[in-house]
Length: 127
Image (cartoon, rainbow, N blue to C red):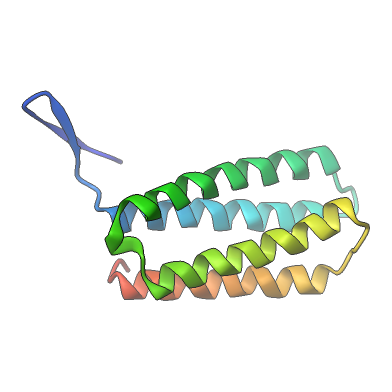
């Protein structure tokens, strides 16, 4: 839970930028995992997959702004995670819009996201 303290009328959040970006990236990864499960299901709901992908991209845009704002987030590990997300998202678009049902590539890219996320958390000493 995000707590805050009021200092002179300005709310000060207790989470660090690293903790917040970790939360954003966790949300992105979880949504990507959900999308993977949606598209590999026999009763695949394309509309739900597209909606979830759009939500994921909105979280990514917010995370990218956070990274631009806080220089301490401009690390190799953050860049690696962003790159693995971009790779996954590109492959997802191939599955959703181009009839390229290479689920194995999608699974491999999802695993790379997880590994990059774990490395990011280690680099920030979060877990």
